[in-house]
Amino acid sequence: MAPVATSALVSQGHKVLLVGTASASPSDLTQARDSILSTVGTQGSVNFEQFDRLATIPLPASTYNAIVTGGIAPSAYQHSSAVLAALAKTLLPGGGLSLTEPVPSATASGLPASLAQVLERSAADLVSTLKISGFVEVTTVNQRQATVQEIEGLLKVWGVQDGVSTAALVGQIELVEISAKKPAYELGAAAALPWARKKATPAPTAKAAPAPSVKKAAVWTISANDDEDEDAELEDEDDLLDAADLVKPTKEQLAAPDCGPDSLKKKKCKNCTCGMEEEEEEEEDTSAAMEVDTSSAGPVPQDAIVASNANRWKESAITEVVPKALQPKSSCGNCYLGDAFRCGSCPYTGMPAFQPGEKVQLGGSMLKDDIDF
Image (cartoon, rainbow, N blue to C red):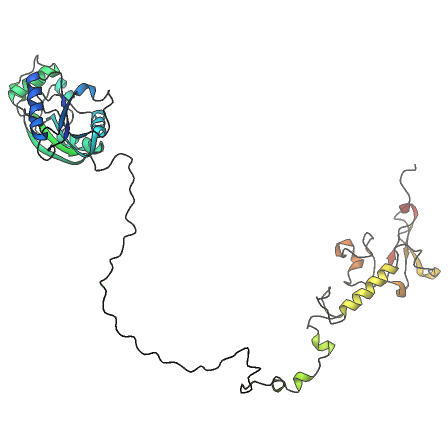
């Protein structure tokens, strides 16, 4: 069978790899080589490699324009995925592959088990394997029945001559010739995607004459030199005020609705004008002048002291009634409820809760240490 080296794959000046087998005769190999050399000419070249070495030796990467494999009889070998990957690596981008391989016919039936093992891949499976290996434009060039002489050569290579009738295999074994190409790029190559396409520039057209511009009169203008302009008419500021605007507001009118000593607010506003700020200052002065103990409160009338909770402690606690004039005024009104209702600067901090108008002082053993040193 002559090698498949069509003009579409092999051209003048190409570098071609011819793949042969150990079972091929030297005359067939020489004839196939001379046939390819006549096509590539003196500027081209033909290299030879054994089929059984393709998957084990390092082939030069991106070297050959075309590869011819399985075209020299007997075409008895299947191209595994490893062999196809090696062939794809050694091809130049856009290079061609011519492959010949035996396959079972579509009507094959009753093949011996020894033949079913070597003919397990159909022509469609071979095309799929080539595509998975990275080849493109996979085309079946020719698919024909193997002759009796070709079947005898296949059985001899496969070693299944005994007990197998050559005549019974006619029409069940076919030889398929497939042409494929390597993509026009290397494995791992990168290319920019044409997302930003340039818009076509329209042909220049004659521009129409622009319409005459009409200058609009300004409604009003203002300038920094209007004060010096005697002709400029300015508005008098005093004319914009009426008699009600000239009356000075009172202190009560300036106070906010919820502001003032009698309001519910507990703190003065920023820039207070209602009098709460002065009142708080007076309360602070009064609180600073007073001390917590009874020594600063002056003499207390005897009838103002009442005993309470006589049996609560071993020694009774005394409740002292402070005269109203000496009582500090609370700004929040909740100091008598306890520390939970007192502010940070409250003079009653740390004291027990008491009734309004009363001041509690702990007496008796509450002022003594539990342990004598």
